Length: 340
View (cartoon, rainbow, N blue to C red):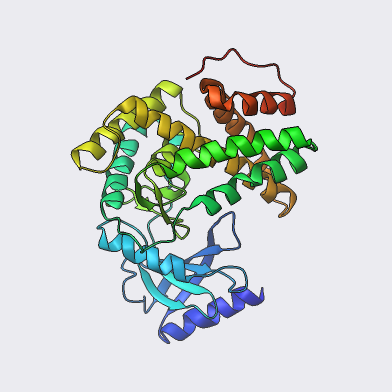
């Protein structure tokens, strides 16, 4: 309640003539909260719709500066992201333009027939974002960060969610596989990476899509965002459809002269190994959200990630030891596999 009262005082101080109401807009997996500000008088400059979004990010928990920086990069690239109308970084408050109320995820859950149009817009925007890439603008998605993310899987998913204790041999299997995954990821060309480019963070908006939750953007592997988009945390698609969308992105990227591999089979392998890193990480993150932060609803989606992880592990000979370990930890028999 103290944070909310402080936010209301800050908003009132921006425009003495403003009259407004606040309503929860959304929350995410961090400590940030978002409120929709509806103005009844003296609407702030830039809030032409009569609404804006107020972000509350406690400064002892969250740093708003990356959000402000990446918002500027997206705007300069010509993409539709929230503009910062006002800020108080010391208190952790931002006032942002409002991109609407309907996420891609909500629209697709109502009507999967929208998928082709929405994914076409998402991949167009992704190519535009990547074309804007410049070195030294964003933190590097380096070996240390990739490996730190992967460690969430044994710590939180295996150790806490499954309640399993890894033997020294198990730990060696994981270390060997993680080294291979990180090496494959780092061998890719580098671009701007949103790092959570999925339907939950894309909005039905004009122009389409509106892009949210970009504050963790980095400079890293070119396949990361398309892998996140087609194998999403909260909605699943048939493998053939994910492959088709990836091909369409790859064709657009080639035409735009982005540094994608000229051989789609090699590009798809890069996508699979990048997606594997992400899905191992997110399985760990969702377990941590459930057990550390009390957000138990995230456990409902963990089977989706194991469903992404196991087929990829089974397709590559070098990952076979990790595939066998995951099967054992999950209490499943080994799947029929073919190796590359």
